[in-house]
Structure formats: structure tokens, C-alpha cells
Length: 558
Image 1 (spheres, rainbow, N blue to C red):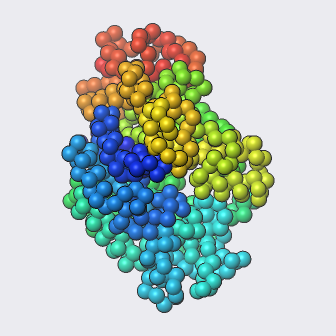
Image 2 (tube, helix red, strand yellow):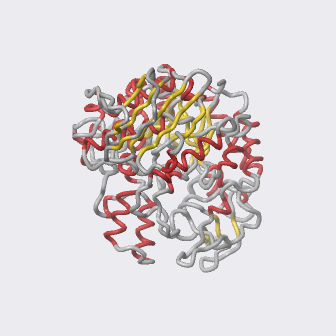
Image 3 (cartoon, rainbow, N blue to C red):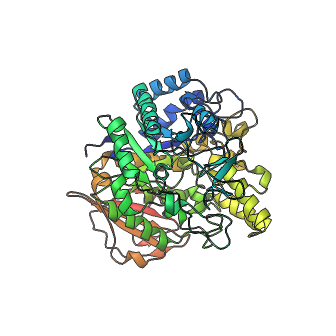
């Protein structure tokens, strides 16, 4: 396949939590530079940086005040240039986080926009008549509360789908689109290799901004059904492709909540006139609450039957038409081994982490690894509200417990321990030194107490560690074309199996047979593996054939 990124593996870095070089308790770009050889050893191809732009950090950098400057906490533009140079020298590419559904309210555009109705930048954002008590429509914010903020100085409201400090840009204005494309070209000319596009399918709002359907128990309506995949999204992405992306050797991935397989086929078509691939979130919603007000604040675990059905749907629907992204973790999701796996003991943590890695990396698409996933970092299991930093988690507690009293304190704290974004943002665990070798000073987010046992140093010294399992999976992807181009198919009858996930990958000359035990029990299955089949990766040293031990994963090639 011509597109270089299709057999690549992408590693996401959350800069504040990766490595602190100056002991101020916050990770930074020089810290990232110091760990590039580690990523090269792992074998990844592309580094995705969560935002490093100048920002007030209301939403951890996803509120950008200057798209062409580096946040001083993370370093300088000279530091970024040094990162780019060293990464490229090591054969690693850099993918930036592009956040253009909204800016910070401290961005020069918004300051001008808010200064008066006749300012040339007024139309850079979405302003409507309304009051504090009667906003322009019933939309809520994804961070709880109303989706509109009243501005008394101009007697209008502006739209913010996220925090009130994150006003939405008005993409209907051609000047906004031109400025965004100019900024993107500026970064690409500097040498970056692509963009991950934050909630990119929210940029096209419906005409007239109508009310959304509101649940009876909710104070505000969920706007996602109206703002996701809006009427002009494809024409604007094709315009972006024409103005910025075409004729450049870049990779793009769009974060697209609420996307369907049919929409994803348009976004990530193999024709290549919009994006390389998209993030969909259906498998991330399998353990959410049936109560739409509570959403992900639940204590459920996804069943294998639901998980397999969803992953299979995406594998089958996009094959030969569009490209999948493959992920378990990112900065907005809890740790995979705590969520879909089993971190109740060291043995089950290691086995289930390897099983889940095998499941993901043997599917068709471009895999993403989130920092610490490759050593099996777990949820932090914080026990008190004061441990949490994430604005989304704190807002959810306020609305669900304090205001609406839908859950009691103890239940909500258990839900936060399972699903808070803070679980993904605890500092990277490098060693058993103070603060996990991340920083010698007090860290911006608490370190997971299990760092003394779960850390990179231990992983690198153990030939059977999760790290080396990921390393081998990456090597197989780079060397076996069938993992990139082979068709995915469930083994006959497997769709009804509640314990074992079995599928094949097949191209013209190779077949892979993937067997995965999703449980902590031993099961027996007769899949008639051909006698000449070679076991190419497993999380057990030996092979007991039809017997599948707790969380066993094995892949045969024939």
C-alpha cells in the first residue's frame, strides 16, 4: 500500500505527564527529547503530541491562546525545533494535535471578537442573542452545565461546547478557515508530519442552531446528535485537503465522536480526499450507564460479546473502503488493563494486558499506543475528590452528586476511579525513584502509588514484560504484510462465544489465526489449527493446544 502510515504504529505523548526535565513537577519538551531513544527501542514510527501550544491550561492545553507559540511550561519553540530534529534523525515522525473547533477565550481572536459587535473578528465565533436565564437554545456543554455563556458587555451569548473558556469558532466564516489553513501550512513547513484533529466533526453546526432533544432528568440537551457530522463537514475537510494536505506526505486522524461506519467511510476513504483515518468511540461506550445523564459514570464492564460485535463491525465495514484507527487508550480514557482487562493481581495484569494488546494489534488499521500502556500502567484508583484535577471529572461530580443527587458520594467516587480522565494523566512511571523518575518535585497530578512495581526500568529488565510483547507486536506489523492488508474474519460460530475471541487475517499468501481468552478461567476449544501452523506470538511460554488458559493470547501463521 502506498500510504506509509498504514503499517505504522503511533505513540501518544501527553506532555505534562511524560517527563519533567527541570523539576517543576510538569513534563516538558526537553523531557520528551530525553526519552526518544526509549520510543525508538519500542519500535513505534510516529509520536502524537497532545497540545504543546500556548494555553491558560483550563483544559490541559486544549484551550489554545496562540497556535504559533509553545506554552512556556513545556519549553520554547527552540526546544520544539530540537525535538523535531532529533526525532527525525531517529526515524520518528511528529504528529501535532490540531484543536480548531474552539480556541481559548484568551486567544487574540476571541479578545477582539468580544470587544464589540462591530469588531472585524466578531464573526470568528458563534454569537447569538440571549440572556443568562434564556440562552439561544437548550444545548448543554460536554463538560456539564449550559453550552452558552452570556457576555454582559455586548449583551449576547457565545457558544462553547466544552468549557466556557473554550469558545467555538465559526467555521461558516471563510476568514476563519483561511487562518486555520495558513496555521496548518506553517507547522507543516516547519517539518511536522501530520495532525490529530480534536473533535473535528463538530465544526459544522446545523443551520439555525435548533434545540436538541433533552432527556427528562437533564438540565440541558446533549448537542452531539446535531453538531456531529454537520451539513458542511465534508466540503470543509475537502477544502482543507486541497489547501493544506494534498501533495504532502502527512498523516491525519480526525477525532469524530458519534461517527457511523458510513460517515467514517467518507472521512477516511481510500480515495484520500479528506483524512487518513478517524477515531470512533463506539467501543469506548460499551461500559457506559444506560442512564444518558450519567453517561460514562458507571461501574459496568464491557462484555466480550458486545466488544467483539463492535470491533468486527468496524473491521468488516471499512475493509477495502476506508482505514481504521485502532486504540484502547488516550488522554481522555481510563487505562485499558483496568477497564477491559484485569489488574487484580500482577499475574492477571500482565497476561490480560498482553491479551488486549494482541487483540488490537492483530486487527486491520493503524494502532495507537498511549504512554504507559506498553508497560501496563493501571488506573490510579484515587479515593477522594481532592485527588482529581480534570475539569470534566470535577464538573461531573458537582452536577451528578451535589446538584442533581443522582448518585451518592461513594458511588460517584467509584465511578471516577473507573472512568476519570485523570487515570490516563498520572505521570509516566519510569523507575522506582522518587515520583516514578518523572520529577524530583511535587507533580502536577499525583503519581500512581504502584510505580515502585510497575515502571519502565523493571519492564526493560524483564524479557517477559508487557513492553517486549508490544515490541514484538510492532515488529510483526512491520514485517508481515497480512497484518496491514489481510481481510479480517471471525471464526465460524465465534460470534456467540462469551469467553473466547477467535478471528483470522488472510491475504493471498498468508493466514493468521488469532485466539484470545477474555476471561480468568481456563477453556477448551477445538479450532482445528493446521499441523504446520507456526505460533508467532503468545503470552504463555508453552502451547497447550486446544486448552486456553486465563487471558491466553496466541497467534498462528500458516
